[in-house]
Structures are given as C-alpha cells and as structure tokens.
Length: 253
Image (tube, rainbow, N blue to C red; front, side, top):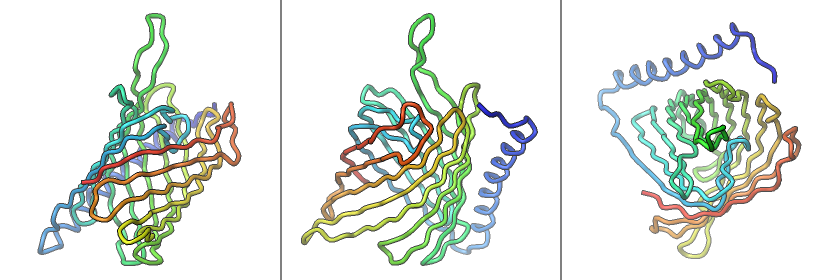
C-alpha cells in the first residue's frame, strides 16, 4: 500500500479544513448581505432495502439496510446528514454532510462540501468479534448542468481520507445523468439515473463501474419503490466485484 509522505498528508488535511472554513465564511457573508434572511427548508426520507450498497465497494453492507436522510437548507447552505443501519439496528455508515452552493443559476450550479463520516464493521479479535468505527474526512465538489427542470448532467469529485490507523484513502469521480417526472399513466411517474464512476483507493480498491437507479411513485403519495444495480467494468479488487442489485421502499416527508 502506497502512503504519502507526512508533509503531503498534512497539506491535504489542511486543504480539507480550509474548504470547510470557506464554506462557513461564504455562508455567513451571503446571509449578512441579504435584507431578508432565507427561510429554513427541511425534508427527510427513510428507506428499507434488500442489499446495502455503498459507492466504494469495500464499504457495502451486503445485506438489508435501513437508511434515513435529512436535509436542512437555508439560502446557499445545507446540512445533509445520512444514517445507515442494518436491520439489527447496528450502525453501518453515519455521514454528516455540509454543502455550500458557490454558483446557483437556473441552468447551472456548482457547490462544495465536506463530510465527517464513520464506517462501522465487524473485526475479529482474540476475545471475539467487536464492532469497530473508523472515521473519514472528505471534501467534495459537484457541478450540475440542467438541460430542463427535469433532466440534468452532473460531475462529482470526492477526496476521501481515513483518519484512523488501517483506514483507506483515495479519490472518487462520478458522472451522472438524471431524468425525473417521466409520466407513467395519469398519476404515476418514474425517475431514473445512470452513472459511471471511477474509484482510486489505497489497498487495491480501484475500479471503473456503471450503475443505474430507477424509482416509481404515485403523485401525492409519500411512498416510492426503487431498484438499483451496479456492475464493475474493470477493477483490481480481489475477488472481482460481482454484479449487485438492490430493491427498496422509501417514505418521504
């Protein structure tokens, strides 16, 4: 496993800290310039699925999971935590996301974000199996172009750094096309995403993947069902990642 020299590691951690500081300063500056303070907007969802899948295959749960998300938005700033648990209510992934929209136009937006994350896994010891938490810190940049109000193309770059001994670190690149409000009869509609992403992590966690997600719902009904699939195109992960699929039911507030 290739490790960066301490000086470079310090520079990357400093860049992450400065990005977070920039987000908060920019948010404070934006709000002080506005005469009318933006209203706080909130939304949430909870879902249950058949096979917990994470964007980095090593972090996947591989069995049914419960995922809860919350989004608190005020102006250009948002707090977007996500809590993921197994059906036994053991934590899987806990993310605390902070985002700030640097550019916010009708057809284009660009935002930066940072996340404080914990990944939980079982570890065998001499005294038995224990549940271990590993901390991660990441910075993210997302650009999104909207062709229409219901169709868009986005690109995401994520620099992810494990903070504990034995954790991985690396890069995540994602290109995603999204289409919503696809009519399905008088009241039903579909939403679909197609993405290609590349991961480059330490410890032989590299690969190019394609994934798709399709959801179906009925207007004015808070429930929707979804299907997710992911396939590796090329990877040095051993064994080679198999085809994975996931189906679930979600409730939105």
